[in-house]
Length: 611
Image 1 (spheres, rainbow, N blue to C red):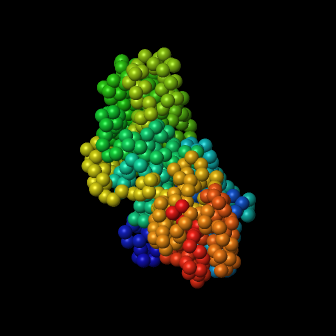
Image 2: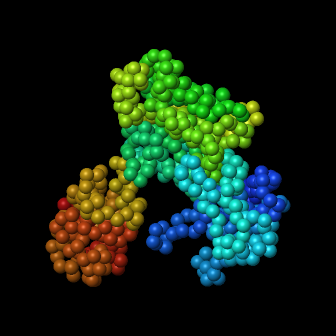
Image 3: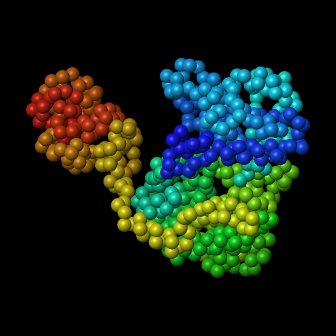
């Protein structure tokens, strides 16, 4: 960090964004200005940061992510901090935890309070165990703690608490609405150029994560990546544990990739839709351009003073007009709007606030009612737009069977639907175009820089076709054997099911991809000449002049008793020690981790491919 700044700041290197400590000082000052006149003189804001945690009952510590309100106010990366702000003066105090000296063995040099004061640009820093005495010395008129409802999640923010807080007067009502008002708020190109039929959705997710971290120092994602192809594009929150971006991408699929990175807890949220093979069909082009037209209509209309509900309705109307032009609906658009037909094709809201959380706070101020109408009830805000607000604009058209079936069974909506045309789009998936914008004095600033028109997308993807492709699934057995086997444990039940790798268990020749040269980068003659059945014809002493454990970890009988299923009873990593290349590299002596020569064993070997 020191190399990145001449003043307190955050960055991950000279090629990444620098976030100055002044940003958080300005945030605190803005909060104090809002509170002055509403709280008694001498009031102190007290916030509690996120706590260190372990995964369930284990000692594994997941990567820590700071609580969003605390991050907004102080920009602190570490867990278990408290922070106090004197409303009258803006004077700021951080309270880091005092770790035992023994932690230095495991965590490196332990920082002092003076170190934290300098790192985060605050006025004072004291150990968190000293909070009662430090605050008592300030004699606060009231401690303002944070407690309020997040209208997106239904969860409440955690109120600061510490031993001894009962001796202070505490107000947990005024801070939440005030701080909420203060807080509101190139990787996609690589994916487009890399995708092609024959890869898996999760490979594109992996590429996105790698690129964000490798080029931008972004260790975490803003949310679970959605990499839907084909019909999966109609699953609004695809990518969850039950459907973990696991489909094989097919030629002709439409892709909907919704992924965002996070930098210093600030998030991005972008969705791109494009054809897997790089060329739009007429059907794909029609739906895509309908959504693109809706997106740009909203962008042209947003500015301070505009209702977000009206923007959602504008998107709905544009979709219906375009679907009518394409022959999927028929009739009067105004009548369609009355029966909320647009929600059949776009059941989610038009967008959301974005900042320290992907779905940031402030959408429904206290006392605001949520609509019960289809589509409108899913809006994450119903506010009138103001300058400096940061939002997403993300219209979409989807073909979701359960919604289409319900619409056909609803006489008020069914009269507008052209069944034959709509049924022909079942399985299409969906198209969503999501951009990040900031409301300016007289309009908006577009913060997303990715290809959006059909022509731009096809041109970019054509450039990608001239690059070497990623390894395709048919090459993956060899790829795994040569490079990744040491990390994979494949039991018999896992190898010999109905997957592409079933062939691995059919015969030793298929395990070896037909020649030992493919497994061990050696010729068949250098390793073995006969079938697996001949490997075990001799006694253990004839196979290796050492104990069985020196031959292949387990006994020879466990490795190669008459059938491949018995070979696979142990993990491949156990059979091959670390990786095939390490086991069979140039001589059997390396298989046995000893100085044996090929002539010392026998002319046969468990990895024979000739039989």
